Image (cartoon, rainbow over all chains, first blue to last red; front, top):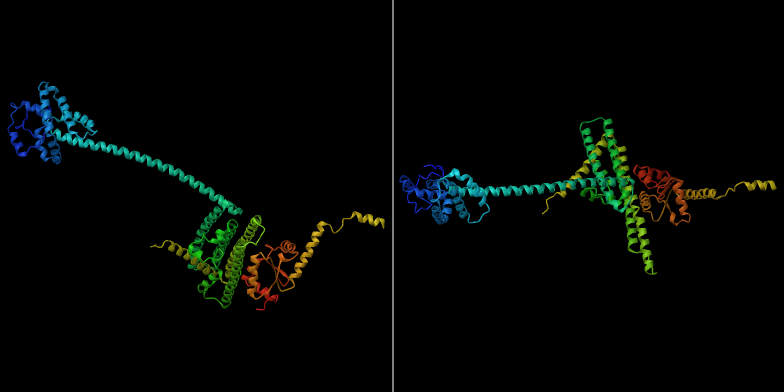
Length: 437
Length: 131
């Protein structure tokens, strides 16, 4: 028994037990009922049925409908309403012509629809308009169940529309936010570029202003990063040349380029020290491990030579003596410079700790303070000189080492030095990235 | 006699201001050279200069006992400093190192010479040290 769609005018099919009609009909009864159709007897029932806008046969089919249970619960609640509504309307219908049945049924449907929507949902009107459109096609089909399913569908569709609208608005807001932050980003980049250029300009002219000191440090950090990249590239070149057993001439060229690179960084340090000596001395431009073992803004030449001896074997007697003497000389120079720095620090502390005792009173104290500060400032100024001499010592030591060694030995020595420092830098990275508990 | 005097009146005197400066410089330079030759190793310093302190320490480490003249305690100190800078080309003016009466250089030169072993040799040659 399939559900059949009928027009509103089809009044032939009627079912027994109409007066005591209740929507949830057991299938067995409906089967029996179908066999007892008497069109002549129950014409008014046809009208009732029509007023209901519901085909009883299709109601039976509801049991096979998956949403039947839901509908069942709905219809049970509304059973009483439907009965009353139907009785009221049939009185009206009997007076009306057949042709008006469609519209009336539509009206009934509307009433039924309204009573159905006890929750007062705003979607009622949309449901009803759709139902009115679909009404002519339905007839005595299971319009009530379809009503409900339609209403649910319509509600779902409306909610979908709402959700889509909201998400469109959200997307618009997000896109606007993205645009504004992109603009801000480009602005910041431009500012940074300008500041960096200014910083480099200032540090190259050696100007010392308080506002620019930060830029001087930053500019040096940037230059050092660039130098480091170039240094690594040259180290790789050196390594390749050594491993491929290149000729002496080629090695000499590479070694000379290497030393030129070193000269570059010392020149850069000198320029940066004029702008901000404390930044260089603090070693903030180096990695933490390097910084720890730093001496006056750089490495200790004597230590480096001690590390290299094992890498440089075999050495002749003369070379061994030369390296040993060089190590001793650099050690002595380092000690001398360290002692000078200590004397400076001590003198500075004394200057700051106690001015000369002056009993002349307040104005005298102020003058005393100013005098103290002026003296301290003068002493601080000599720091740059120490840094310069320390860098000079490092450079001289390296050059002397290259004079003692052969070309091949020099290449190996420079490679060993580069590797040592790159390992120290790697150690710093590992240390910084270590898991902390 | 009268003609000689009138001739003399037209000539400019030798000891005018400009010339006096040259004379004075000459005298001061002479004093510096004189002091520098008094001992095998001589260092001109200033009490406020800590690099001078470092260079002194280096000489002591090498076993030399240089003569040290502090310019800020000398009555002609300022002029001598000027002479060191302009005449001998010592920059910075202190420490100024003389070995065997000859001007060697300032801190940078001394460190460079020390690293390549020349300083020791110079000191030995001047008999400031023996080994």
